[in-house]
Length: 108
Image (cartoon, rainbow, N blue to C red; front, side, top):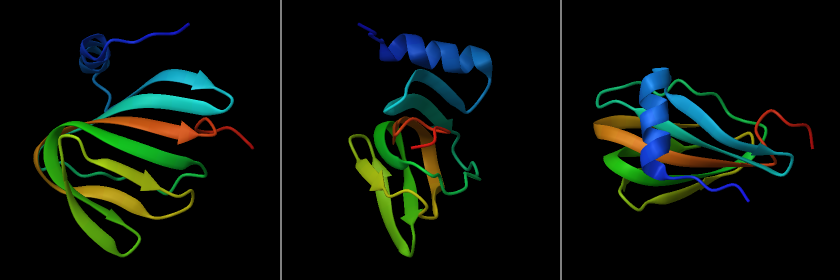
C-alpha cells in the first residue's frame, strides 16, 4: 500500500520550490500536488490524459475550453484529455490535488 499525508506533501512541495510535486505514478494513474500563488500565472498546456483537480485550499477561477467558473475549497473539476484549460484570477494561493488517468506522460 502507498499512503500519503497532505501535510507532508505540502512540506515536500515547499522544499522543492517547484509548483508541481508528483507523489504517485503507476501505469493507470498519477497524482500530484499543484500550488499556484495569489496573482500567479498558470501556463500549463493541454495534457494527453484526463485530469481531475481537487481544490484543497485557496480561491480563484478556472477556464476549461470556453467556460469559466470560480473555484475554492472543495471544488472538483474534471478536464478531458486535450482540452485547453488554466487557472486564473487567483486571489488566494491555490493548493490542488491533481489526478491523471492514465498516468501523466504515459502512452495508453
